[in-house]
Image (tube, rainbow, N blue to C red; front, side, top):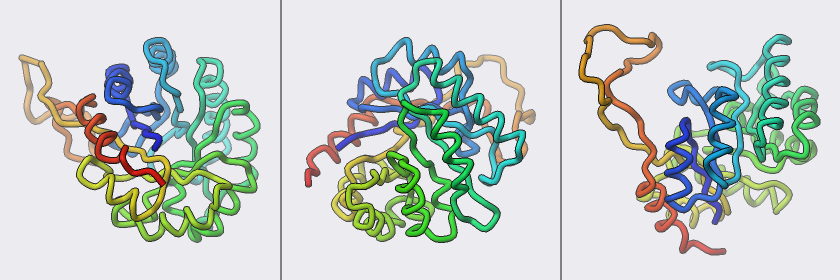
Length: 248
């Protein structure tokens, strides 16, 4: 099994390494499902840990149909991640009809090489997963991250299992979405995936002593500025240990 931890900090990279993961996906803005991290963050994570580093390329929250200007930003972010020493990028683009945006995806893949390319959970919003998988295989994408078009990978396990069978080794199906130590082994046994993606975070209190209730920095959700989602190496290790015995 290969274990990929989704992180948004240097501390997360260290926790992933200490917990036994082999790869990290570095993001910002996880409350929005993940956004492109800063160049400084990419460089610092690359500097402090030897794990394979994949960088999310997503210029904004919301859907995965991008304007020409947004696509131009993605191109620059791919090049920046490559220059900073990333091992791979994670991206996803759809057309208005819900199909994979093949031409633009191909363009980003060409810029990314020789880095690995993962197509992220934009896949879970495509109109036909079987058709989308074949498109990604034809593009030469190394892996697709999916929860099986459900809110969690456990709920989408039937779809994930079908994708693994369809892939037949031509592309890696990376299961992600709500995976933890309690359900990892069950998911792996049901789907036969060889890689899983999880965050292994817990909520901790901010060390701030002065606090001003009633003022928040976000509008689309109800945040708590005085609690933090902190990656924990013991939570990574728990998933690794729970799932590591699953060998197929």
